[in-house]
Amino acid sequence: MTYVMDMHTHTIASGHAYSTLQENIAAAGKAGLKFLGLSEHGPAMAGAPCPLYFLNYKIIPRQYGDLRLFCGIEANITDYEGHLDLDAFALSRVDYCIASMHTLILPPGSAMENTRAAIHAMENPLVKILGHPDDSRYPMDYEELVRAASELGTVLEVNNSSLHPLSSRQGARENILTMLEACMRYGVSVILGTDSHISSMVGDFTQADKFLRGADFPEELIVNTDPGRIGQVVNIL
Image (tube, rainbow, N blue to C red; front, side, top):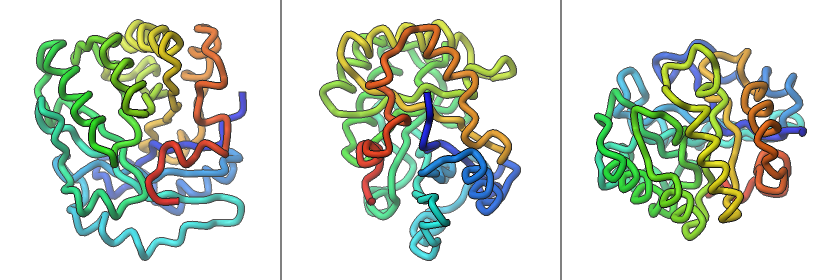
């Protein structure tokens, strides 16, 4: 399969990543991507940008040769009611929003609490992607999660970094497989994200691609393979 977009990447602005935006853009071009998503961590994460950083995205050019850049956020889910760490006004100004749970922000709860947090975050119309819902430290009811994604039109992420042998997330393979099986039953789309924290990872979906092939997951449910589906994961084209 050919992947034309990587919508989950970070730069030095996130505080614990190691490449600049220009370095990521160059890497995306070399990888043959058509779309690159900049998704810096939300302000609740230690070292992450303040809200003004996201409001100032307007100054960043969006076209680099054949590559289109989208400037978004990986917002932190801050409680079990699904609240995010950027207000509605700022979220409406970024090109797209991934919502994710991180242990540095939200202590893992029960499967019911974690699932409720994720679903309530997805109910925010500005949230297009649920990031790495695959960590056993955040047990979830995947049947309920995928059913909600089907109703809300949210895309679920298959995170390449979660599948890496050195990932700090736990149980990703088993959890992603359970999620994919539910996605096939409900016809819910997924998006592969590298979760790059260094430019050499941008556009490299090796782990996720191998996993999806092994699961016989249908290409028509993978957003990354069709440039015409970019509107499904961004708010501002």
